Length: 136
Image 1 (cartoon, rainbow, N blue to C red):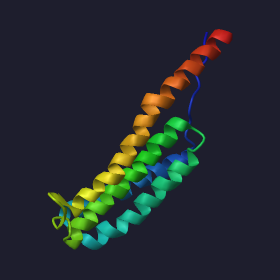
Image 2: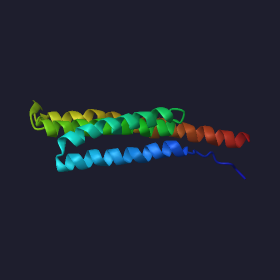
Image 3: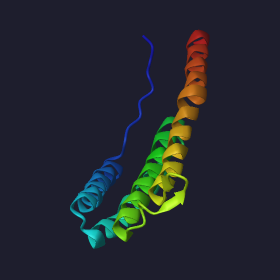
Image 4: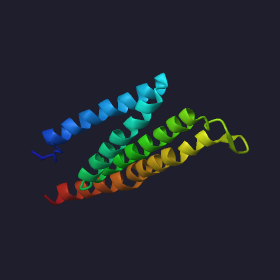
């Protein structure tokens, strides 16, 4: 019978990840309700915990790629929120692009990281796993 590798999350890490979701929801609810101080305040714990989670999972390429993409997603989302709160979201940057559109940069960085993982890294991991199972 072939053994499959398992990824287990220590309980203390899981609790931090769950708290991260609470901060993220508070940030986005604040954005929706235009509660500027709370929304801006919630950026920090949301982003800091996302960075900690990405750092803790650095040994696992799949987890790292997804968690780093989340860091960029939160960054883009936070910039977009701040641009609306500060009123520069609709100011023209270039042609029909506004300052809000600058949030696309970190969104695209996150997509590129995931694209690299799924198009380049994951197929190599599957190939390596297949070769290892053949040798065993």
